[in-house]
Length: 566
Image (cartoon, rainbow, N blue to C red):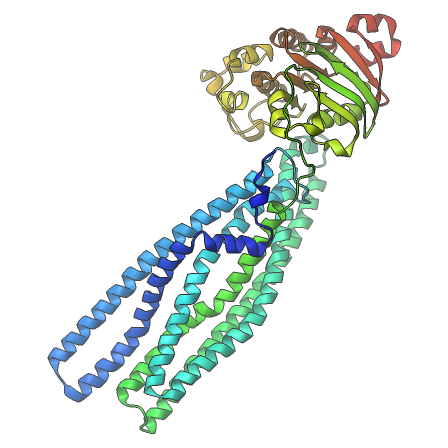
């Protein structure tokens, strides 16, 4: 199977480099424009100082008007460069975040599951928050460079007035960054832990939503709520820790910046008092001391954002670098739609062996529900072929040698708890819009009464997880989707447990009629489905113990009769 694994980033640092590399053009333009913005901001107090000095010396109204016009040009430059620079960077940021969201989602939707110890809620958090925070690096680097430009221009301008002022800015900036870089490491480690705890809380919510109905059924919703509250409290406490560390970082940065600005201002005042700089240079120095607070603040915050982006990128790498649980083959099934299970041993299964010929409808009566679940998991490729003993063959070829996409095209295993998605009845039955047997599938699954209840028919809206449908309606909708797929080999597990006996009988006839000439395996204890099958296999204690038609087994096997009659 061809997958994007070979092109996938290998670590968080690789993800950041990839994001930077493919946005180098937008970042270059953004850096130029944001550098122009910071240069204009820096030029403003410099220009004011020159105007004051020029006015006091020459007292020329024409020169004053020219200076005011120059200020207007500076202000216009500042406004436009900020506007277009941020537009470019934010567009690149948003686009890059979208790419990583799609990449993480694609990794989760690969036909071969990944060997990663994360729940679906955690993957959701990684695909949203972590993708956004990783993409922030697109803005961080240009803003970091532009802030550096502003500091250097301010240091140069002050150095021209007096070398000591310029050196003070440079030395102070280096000292501030040295202190903050140490503190940012603590932010990175705290953020990683916070993201992990928030993701676990999200996973817990997803699990509770899925199991909400059964939880209410046996009164376990209060215990489940307490369990979520503990997980959420852990996430809250870690978030408070991160906020505390971030507050200390921001407060330290602000205090150090203020100390530097005050030092520049006091030094400039002392130099002016000593007559070593003039009034215009003093005005410029005081203005730059006030202005330099902004780029220094921005500059000092960058290490924090870099560490957050790196922590998020490392969490994305958990998903993107996780190896597949198995290495699938590359072959395709041969012509013919037979299904063979040969001496399979997995879980409760003990050397199960049977064969479903092409075009045959076979039912399996599993006396132990766990055995039915294990068999369905093996056939659905939820268990890698190298994780169980024995062989499963589709079209005469070993499952381990087949490409997963080819198996999915030929073989469909529909679970008894098939997921229902928000959309319409039609979009749930035929997600791709390519099925040619939707009406027949609706008829065979006895979903006709649900369609007839609503004037929109198949376009009736379905809520997330089928919240506006009954249990029986959801089960029939899932069955209709499986039948509409019209695959060569169809495996159904307990497709009628939530419907009444009359509907079950009609569904059994409909499935047998629609699947006539197609290979079908039904794992069920339903007498109606067992009777509709060409033959029945009895799965007891992990092995096939009997094989015959449903009616003959009823007549000859007392244990079978007790197990399947209602």
